[in-house]
Length: 522
Image 1: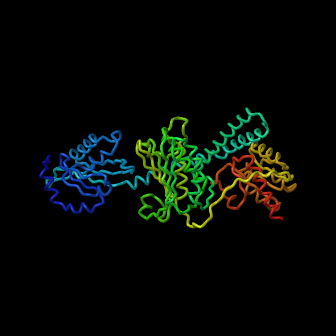
Image 2 (image 1 turned 180 degrees about the horizontal axis):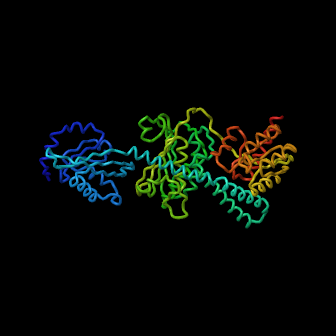
Image 3 (image 1 turned 90 degrees about the horizontal axis):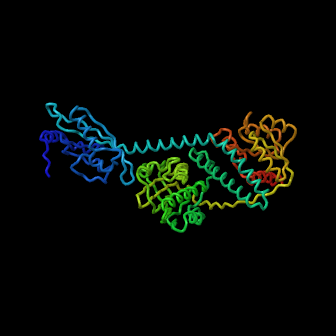
């Protein structure tokens, strides 16, 4: 059907240089008084190749991609006509929508077009692409949310870890004493497992604020995935097939391997839960060179060598509304009690801490794809790290240990554990008490809490080193590394033990420090 265009708007178009519009970084349309399209440049189609040029305003075209619940085209057009054609006032609106898993934000401005006699004869529609600013703002909001969660986690970490320390420690002690009492052992095992889960939850929370201690090393993802393969298979069960492919990945990464393992574990759990009837998980790692353009699009810091992890499932998929919040802390689409909402948030935070980026695309009833880009290690010739848990060594040498701890239950637990292993244990609850005891003689090892009611544990160590230079020191805390005293202790190279620790870790650490001194003296 041919559209009868108002002659006045045709005259207007002939009177202007439309070639200038084609050079503008704006989408430009000219509409007559009945909203018929008289002219349109091509700018918007370079942003959105999914759109096909039609005899419609850009607002009409993109409205097809906006959910009706958040946008009413008829109402928007009526408001625009009232403002522009009736009141001769500009009208603005902003639309945010998703096309093929890309978030787009467009700002529309509608202005009246006047004839030579100042009559309103049409509407000039200009469209600004604000997608980059929108993505930046969303990233800043995401970062702020993580910062707030991290600040909350850091605030409660010390007290919470002290409580967990007592629960886990006494549970282990009672398990040793339980003998053949299977009912008691089962109950203690439940308590211990719950305590360890709570400790793991605290560690995940601390990741958000970058306060979790990281141990970086150079390693190959093939090694990591090979060691995890059986664990991942057990996690998903027989109905889900896991395919691993690292053939395109020759480069190593410099990362905390335990945190990278956490990424694979969390993504696998997410994929498993999305496939209740079974399906396929594909994990592929490849080397890739990212250009400056790639870096800008992915919001990375520098171009160069990266290792890409492609993780896909054939599950239920995630709708656009939920996809927008998928990395938010505590956000979950699972039923109550079925998920903490920390799995994917933890993935996001770990990746960002490693100077990488994670993207997600999903289609309902088709599946979800996560792509992670991690910088390749600068030195690729490092040997692969081999980790082995050493058995605890019993100590029956009557070495003396002074424990300085203000939490009575933690103090009682630590003294019990070390006494059980043959150490001569004394205790103090504050800096002043420890100094008074040290003035009467040296101890082989001092186990000191960093934050004490009347001073700093680090200051206490430095004082004791002056009067007892042959003594050894082990600092401990449930606080995170943002505490100045803890950062100072680590920077000075002091031995440090994070709470909550197991009784095995406590006695093994003490034993290793004391044995290290013996080896040096020999």
